[in-house]
Amino acid sequence: QLNLKESGGGAVQAGGSLRLSCVVFGRTYYNYCMGWFRQAPGKEREGVARMNTGEGEPIYADSVKGRFTISRDRVKNALYLQMNNLEPEDTAMYYCAADVGGGDCRSDEYSDWGQGTQVTVSS
Image (cartoon, rainbow, N blue to C red; front, side, top):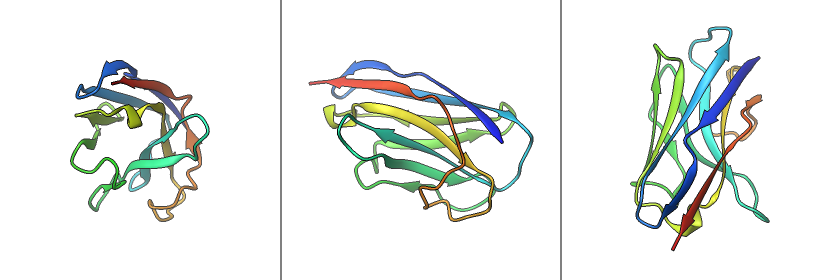
């Protein structure tokens, strides 16, 4: 099991940027799925950006393509989400998640989750 801790959320105006960070604590794994999900009040959880730590291209939701970038620092064992040109529709609680089970990273069935960090975008 991995413990995940997010930070970097906040309130910004439309068009602004934020960078979310997620530090991973626990056993060292290789080639596993990590991702950023978000959930707004009254809406279903949405997978925003995902990646396999070992190989492959990141996977983005259509709603954030060209604006958000997921990246990872192996040395710091951290995951990031750079969010540019933010829109009010991006307002949500953002969660970092990981799954070491070897499944498809496009699945929403991630085993480990952080507590979330709030992002609020005003118009």
